[in-house]
Amino acid sequence: MTRKRVLCISYQFPPFAGTGVFRVLNFVEHLPDRGWDPVVLTVLPCHYERGTALDDGLCARVNGSARVHRTKCFQGIDAMLSLRGKFRGNATPASAGQGEAAGSPPAGKGLWQGVKDAVTLAYRIPDKQVGWFPYALSEGFRICRREKPDLIYASGGPWTSFLIGLALKAHFHLPLVIDFRDPWMNNPYDELNVGFRRRVNCFLERWCLRRADAVIANTEPLRTLLADTAGSGNKCHTITNGYNEMEYVGLKARASGTAPLVVTHVGNLYGKRTPDSFLQALTRLIDTGRLGTHEVAVRFIGHVDEVRIKNLIGSHPVGAMVTCVGMVPKNQALDMLFQSDIALLIQPDTRLQIPAKLFEYIRSQKPVLAVCGEGATQELIEAHGLGVVADTDDPEGMEGAILDVIRQARSAERVVKKDYLAFEAGALTTQLAGVFDGFFPSYPQTKNG
Image (tube, rainbow, N blue to C red; front, side, top):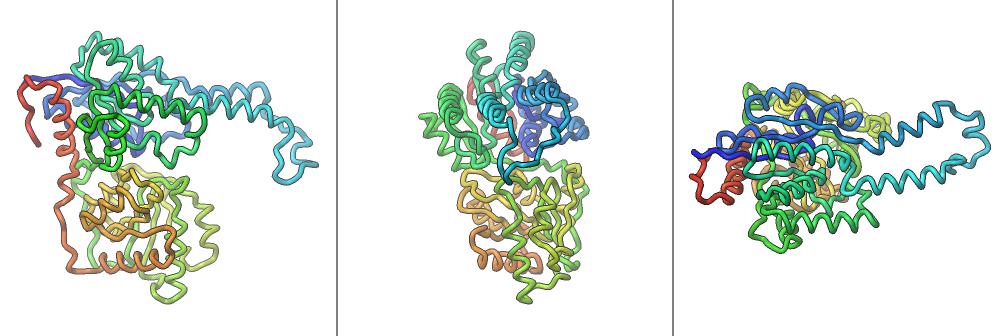
């Protein structure tokens, strides 16, 4: 087998512990077995944004699989705010909050806030990680000169990684593969992608799509959209997210028939991702006697707004059914998922996206209750018979969906499907290596697996 080398540009890489890291990590782990030796360009852990979750245990999965180059990243907005704090100090004027109408901005805030907002939006072109560009580009030049990769792979978001990849491609004349883990211009969670910033990002997305040699999307609807913008469907491919079988070694499912049924949501809840409609439907089922408080227990693993949940539930008995676990290492989260009966997915208003956690749910073989609208997530769940889909704007439908998924979890005739094998990291990496190999038709084909 003729071995080849790929430069992988990814802002998110271990010990970064966010969901977005696992797609690239799985690829890097499995590429050597498919004839590709990865060299990774990423960020120093001390230069991630404040509050970034880290898991040093993930670094062990990289040892022996790849050489990793880490650089600084200028966090411009954080630096600006820190500078402002030094000038203003921590003292609060004695008159603050006095004599001001409720809801009115504090005196002196208007000018600073206007400047801050303008700088914030400008600094987010293409995203707030743009401060990584000069450091990564400089290191990328050194890597390309010394290690001479055959191909460049860039994972986004952040979209800054695409710009780094394009600059290196132009100088070294290497094939570039860009991988969209999320939509860029059609992401409902990027509320700041408006006005001038949106116009510039629209141009940059088109520029990246037209100049990349291959484009990968993690859902078919997203691939179709990107192909239209790229002006070529031939270079656009779909490779879904997936799971790594090694993470599931030793995990055991919960004994059937154990009460209460445990409903588990894994992952952070933010923005439009709220448990409100699910919890409200749960309270109505209890109030109408269709469900007892002793029958179901709900737990949220990850960052959630506990105050919001408590305010929503109040003194209702459903409060005793809900537990907020908080952040835990991934292996512990997967163990808790296996020790559950139902997997809860909350993904509203995302027509083009499928959350990575769904593939972990698929591997766990738990029936899924998906709170989502029409789109890629609903299509995947229905195509593979993974569970029940509920619309957040349909209260009665939500109640029915909860009862349906409970019946599925209790059913002794539930069929264990093998569909999950198609989403295993090794199988997905074989697809990626196939895209890479397409640029080198004279090389021997790498093995499948």
